[in-house]
Length: 292
View 1 (cartoon, helix red, strand yellow):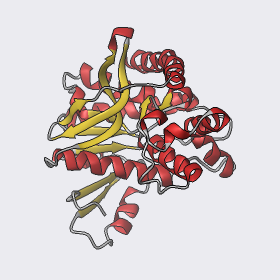
View 2: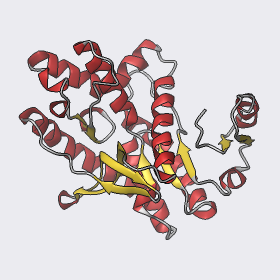
View 3: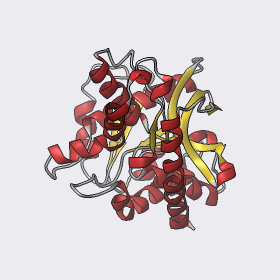
View 4: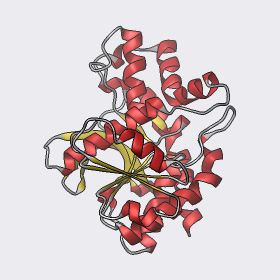
């Protein structure tokens, strides 16, 4: 449905040609093609943006880290193919655990000599979407008004919502604040539990993924002032050995145009950030070690 998409290539280990045939009947001015398991190189040929949601979903009791063993190798192999066939593509990673899979993609590209930090993104938009929704419910406002910047990473305690920077968020205090932060950090668990072992967030994640990809495409097309949080190679906490971090990023014709500072934090947010950083560092190192 995105007017910026002129061609859509769908690839999976099974079923992609059928899904492509189905999607290709939607009345938009774009070409849709589906590729079978042995056609990865053809699927990647000439693409400008690759979105990776591949892998296994979470089941009850699983953390995003538990997904690591299966999803890490899938993401590494896809990154190696992108390096070979479409080295200048912009890569947006949904596959969890994002805190580890994004460094896996970066290291795989680096080994192939084609890593450009402006072109690799972890999609953290679902945290932003949830924050606006949950804050809107509490304050009785339209989520379009109750937008929250979310920084850090994309799992549990590494998710740091900057509620103090939202006119609606800064009014939330005490137990209500603690509950809201917990719900933003662990909102995925609600879905996993409600689906009773049959999967995790897919429809809300598809929406969030499409929303980020739209922002990226708008930036690539030259639109000015496109800003969204995303998990990228970042200088913000590099001095502490954390070289990937999610914060507001301005997107442009080359991908990352500018990484914006996180701005003033409340005392509670300082605590959340302090809890985030050691976990995030471990997650990033785990991803890098997988490729080493």
